[in-house]
Image (tube, rainbow, N blue to C red; front, side):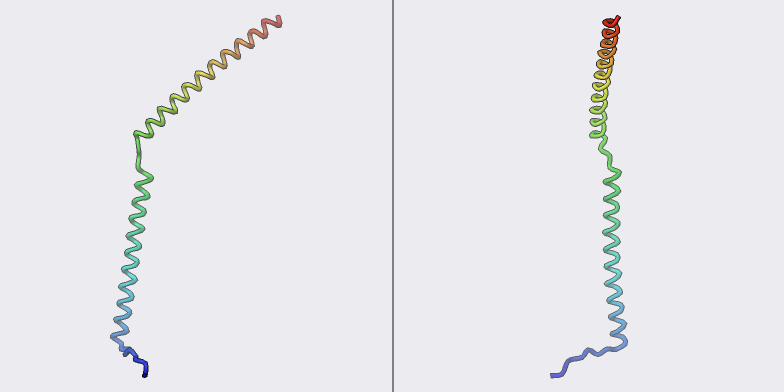
Length: 91
């Protein structure tokens, strides 16, 4: 019941090194491909423009801004009238 030993020859040693190196290179290439694909996807996501959504958002913001400007003008007119009424009442 002796242990069975693998004969370690120089050629088998080189074979193991070559096999391990091939495995390492394959893993590195797989990871490089994954990184490249993820980078492409990230760049596409950043540069992807939805012009339809943006133009609708801009139109909505412009309408809100116009409404706010009208309210400010109305309040300014009311404040001006109140100031005139107040000064007329004092006189």
